[in-house]
Length: 182
Image (cartoon, rainbow, N blue to C red):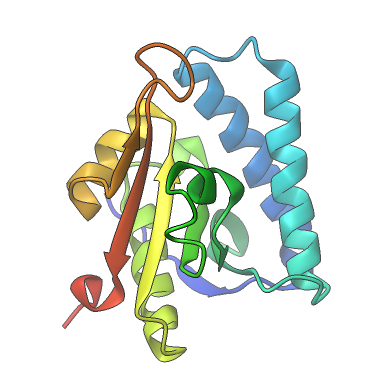
């Protein structure tokens, strides 16, 4: 079953729900990746996402967020902003001027229902509207990497064993025009 959600720019009234999404999805992702024991990393990732959203809402950051709402509650997020430290490092700065699509989170109970795809398409249309022609994204999570290969094709760069032996980090470079719905 696919949910039809309302996707809009994140507002201050979305903070509490979005924070809940971050907390729930980050913990769930780490658990499913077999990394649930890394409490310090989990907490750090959650705090980083909360800070990113707060700074975006307060106009202290060029990052912007869209949220997916269902029955009035935020159930998913996506962001776009300057490319992050890992992408810059893994590409020797080659993508430094390319914006990064990130913070794609959908509550676990709502996953695999097309909500993430709706968020991605909404963001791609927003990027097109803003005249942005390319974007990048990255992932060190094996489950997400499989999805991104299906959705975005082969990665632009693979940082072998970035997270330890057998745990690569993947980076994609995409053209907005390749993903616009006609």
